[in-house]
Length: 135
Image 1 (cartoon, rainbow, N blue to C red):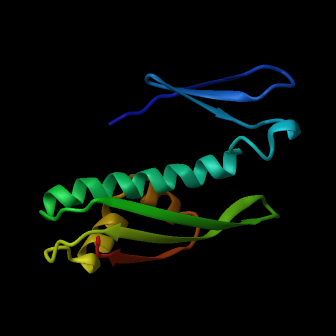
Image 2: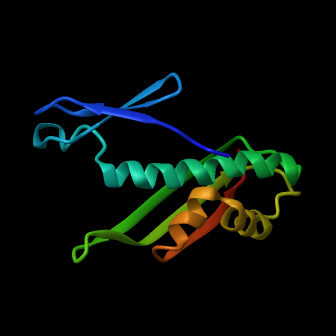
Image 3: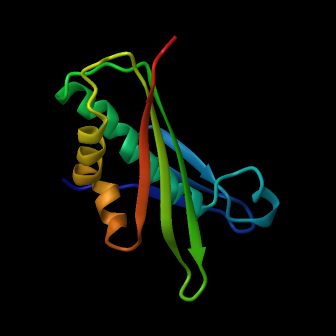
């Protein structure tokens, strides 16, 4: 499989990533530092998207149902050379399904996630997966 995206920016303005029919604005100037995602946050967003896509994928393969999944991701930026390190995630699955095997789901996400495995080659990743029963 191959992937392709486009991106563009205008001098002294912010930038846009063009993916299929989506446009994702991101900050490249100081005036939007508090309102638009920066490249590091987009990087973590890609990691999160990979994990959530795999929750959906494995819900079908492992035959469990869930109403929603939430994910919190944090990382440390090192200075020399500048790079991301020590990514920590907390994935929560909202489900009443007794067939949901959280240990196997976590193992599958970590084994088969494209972005997860790419990042794992460059830095430490650790995380938790928990379920919350729907009320």
